[in-house]
Length: 417
Image 1 (cartoon, rainbow, N blue to C red):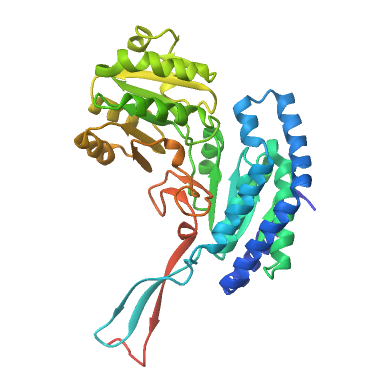
Image 2 (image 1 turned 180 degrees about the horizontal axis):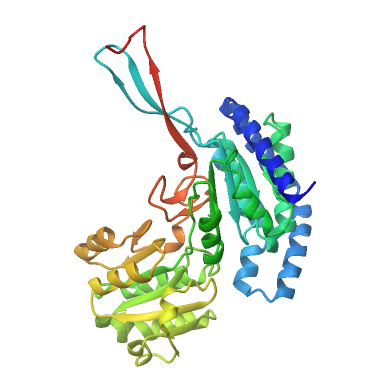
């Protein structure tokens, strides 16, 4: 069977599974998630063996330490995957929720309810935990899913998917509720993007080139998880101890993820006091600094280029710019950012409220690290990605965002005059 026929088969199977899942009880879906969680923990050794193959290949390709960190499966991360599925199982099921309802003057009752999207295609890179997170959210919300992970994590993704699929079927889910495209052939992505007869939405998470390709080629609606060019702005009225702790965490706690800070903006009024101390802390953590001329007049670092302001490093590299005002910081973020996650550190209420109102991003923070942009941290159990779209959903995409709406009308013989 050729690639085209294989992907078509996967699409047909997913549509059939979606028809079954739509009516599958929440109890069965929850039991499936708990069974899968148990199997993931029991399969830790197998998963780490598969992951070791990917890590070895990644080192041979020269992947950065931050990218290898994204790729690595540790005992703790396997347990976190399992715990995430258990958390999702405990969450309230959005399917069937009545969003609104009215009684027409003629007596018919019109309700708007949530129902599954149907079949979700998920295209992602690097992080193998996405395999479990995405499949778990789809299963809980009554959606079938087709997974296509990046080639750098192929062995890890296949191993996780096998555990997931076996556990789901054991608990009573349809056989093809979760499917993974096993080939690393890039042409498979193109074939998946043509499955508009079977797939209802595509959710990509990855670099700019991947997202651009998907927008160009997809026949299916796309909910994009774009790059994370995240900013922290240290205001002239900031508590500098707090600002230092937040900046170090936002950049170095896990630099290879989309909610890590990539650009630091500092008000000119506190630049001389703040930059030397935060630079020392960041460099102690192995971070390379690239600054504007005003930054470099205060601390020794590389010169930042125009391209740096719109670069997602996903590594221990940070661009720094000194700005004259809150408005300058807002303008910079809205121009160069990716509308993902941006933060202000300030003790001034007015500045905080202005920032929250004016920064056009999916998540905006006051006095907290951007690293909290995460479905689990937001109480959503897990996430498929962080949507930077403005239609359908924005921010962490979890259970509610995997549903659509339909009208249900109940009458007693009414006819329209």
